[in-house]
Length: 197
Image (tube, rainbow, N blue to C red; front, side, top):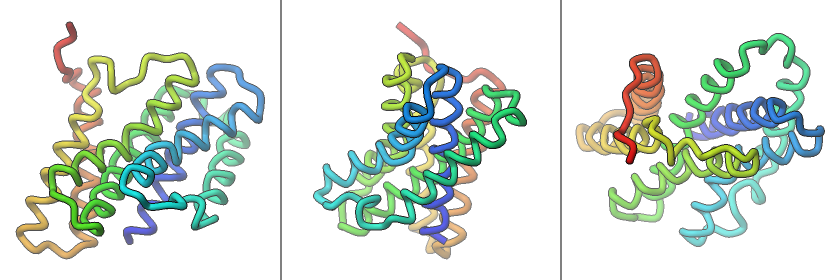
């Protein structure tokens, strides 16, 4: 289930990158690069920081194939994805939930402190999107008033709380990712945000 969630998150972030790049009227190569860095940027940075080299996508070509599939699917159905903002938000939110879990689990696997695991989960979930926004000349979401990284931190707290209660791993993954996804949807719907300076 963990690997499946990781693949799903990669696909979701790749599609999110494609939609952002198409909004910026990039050529196909530019669109693919944005899809790629959105999908693996956070995970690459995380792996380098914890000394997991070669980084994940270099050791498992399935990630590259999934990004390619996401790229072509988004291109083929771009006319059906007429509400770009809604579609982009949905795929970005799914990726946020799933990649937080991936970072948490990698931190646990190398026996890091829970606080550091939560930081790794937040980094994995957020930094691909931040690289995407910077390359597309947008102010990254994490630096704006929208609650984004905070939700990943809350998800990490929920994860470790449930882990202490000895929940089954599959249930643990599902509940944590759903908490993150639902919180993000509610935050946008009800305009919850941190105060801006």
